Image (cartoon, rainbow over all chains, first blue to last red; front, side):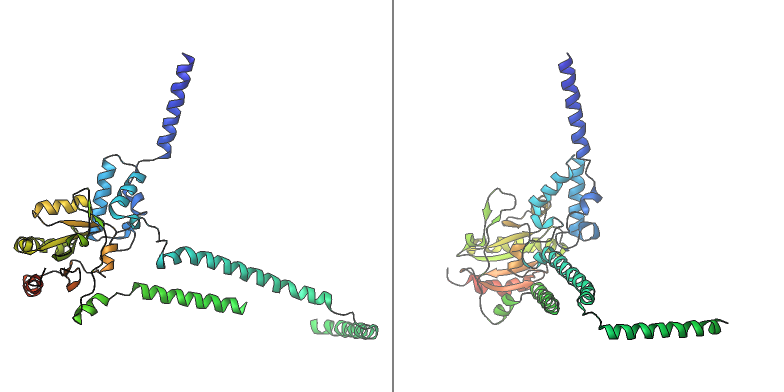
Length: 159
Length: 177
């Protein structure tokens, strides 16, 4: 008896899971994922006569209880894979897949080059030769004179 | 870095040029026919409308074919169906036929029109439009007259008229089989 109850519970749980995974198909949901076969735009954007026929077909299939995937499969059966709102994987349509990849690669190269250039000045200063001792003493003298001059001028300037 | 930017720019320009070239209309069939030539008609095996088998233009080699691209969602296509049916009745005994190519249509809808107009000529299904593309067909309906050797003898981009059929068909029908 326990085994039967456990089996029933398991079946109910699995059925509930399957129902949750596949919600009822709706026209707006499908319209975004298929094309108007003649206009070359997503079905949701088209008011052409053929688009209305496609919509009517989708409504009929929804009324017959078909799932979203079943309806998309039925559309592919009738119009071919180009009815799906995905760019073609040949000819000019291939650019839709290749251009983003190339753009990402170029952006990556640009970031790497920019990062290397950004780091280069730091390395340059490290590599700079040490100041001659005589020049260093002269620089310190001149900086000290400059500081004295500023401290003498500032109070007057601020007053 | 400058080389990479230049290469990317060249690649993008090439892509743009290819895109523009591939989208432009192919007029080679019309140009050839206008010069009096008869280019070979494209051939492709397609599913038959309303039947479980397939067919192609090659099945009609030796016959004159009035090849008509139509769709049930295209009002001018539907308007000319009765004329095409009358043409079929007129030519079918002379080694000629009308052959419909149903373009990007729901077969259920297309068959509804076949029944409504009692069309007796066969139709093939060009479900994704690739066969129409091989004829550079974009302004439906479009009609092509195919001679007995499978060559395009005349083109009609737009609805056919009785006058056009009367002018173009008889010379083809008179050619030896």
